[in-house]
Length: 86
Image (cartoon, rainbow, N blue to C red):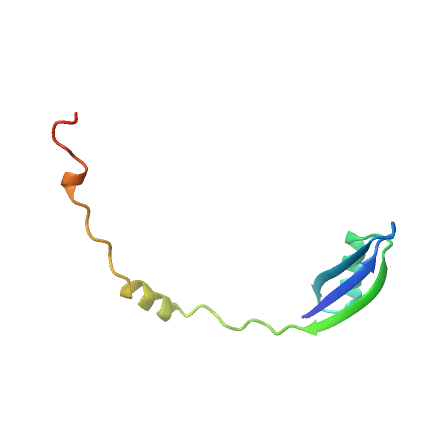
């Protein structure tokens, strides 16, 4: 995937900067941009390659983290029942 950064001028003349669209091609990015900003003029376009995330969930590390956490101390029954308050 590629991240395309656009600076545009809307049809009413306002300038909009830093619109970021991730798409496989420039044509797809421009199509998505024009769905949001009909009849806009592209002033500048920058591209940035974005790597795929390959880091998955390490289930063993999660289990170890859960096992390492201490269990909370049990609640004392007397803290719930105070004599003479019924």
